[in-house]
Length: 513
Image (cartoon, rainbow, N blue to C red; front, side, top):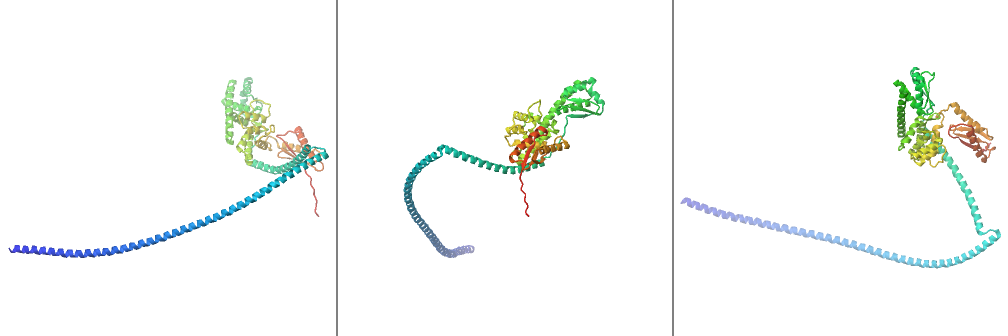
């Protein structure tokens, strides 16, 4: 029983303790809650007041900003209003000015109409007076108005022609002075930039053999081998006492080359008889033709000349086996082509076209058949036949003045051909003969009366003749120049052409003492 009572008392005490603890806890919680609520209320009031102040500040700022914008808009409106008033004032002023000018124009128009009427009256009066004066002048002069007009026009035309001719002469004299200087400069520069070579060829080729025993084999029994050789090649074989040499003679270098190569193969092979000779000659002819075409192609490529007709390429290749006055024709053509290109470049023309014309200018010297036409004209015909351009054709045909020059390429080709061919040593001419020709030129010109000095210049291409001013007049120097040219043509032999320049000048010398 004591235990139960103790338990009951303990449970009662526990219940009382729990109730008492709950009441104390609730009281404490209530106090804390009330303090938090009070603190939160204070913070809310503070935040509310702060927000109210911020809203008021923003409201005031926005209000001030709106007031500023309103003021600015008012100012702009005021400025625009002022501008409109100013424009209105300006327009009113312009309108008044226009009205004033219109009034002035009306007044001037009225005045002009009156003056026009007065002018018409005066014009009629002048026309009447003019007709009366014309009639009076016709009666005095005995000429009609149309006849007098024609006479006056003719006089004015003659005077204008005289003045124009004087002006043209002045311009031509000035142009000649400048052109000669520039031309000489271009020619000198062109010659200096192009290296030249010379080659001398003859009408015979010497074929060297190891021993004279070969000569008998070449001649053959009763001369049948040499006759077969001459018949197949078209050349003459001279087998004489010249030691270790057989001379091949022919005017055509291509035939001589074919004969030389054929003879070389026959001797190397050892079989020399008519059938073998014909076989070898035919084979060598084919080889030479192929070599000619190859030389033409190589030359065109080296010079940068493209689009040549195959026949023109073959003709260019044949130039290697031709010579003119001892100068190899292909070498001369290459040199002329390079000179033409340089000179055309200096003059601002097309150097490729000039090089093409220079290369082809002597194609008329290597015809496949005998012709009577001069080589320049025949070359022009060939170029035209193989579709070369007209200026190229004209340059080829006119480089010896046998055709009228119609393009600037023609004088360039003519000059460069002379530069390449007329220099001392370029063609086969010994120094003594060259000097004798120059001396003969000077002596021939000096034989005329009135000539004081003579000078052969430019390798004999030009002859300068100085005459005395007191012995020959200006009108006589042209006749003298023509007489000297005619005499040179009739009495002398020379390559190309010779220019005769007669100079007459008057000098006055005084001494100051």
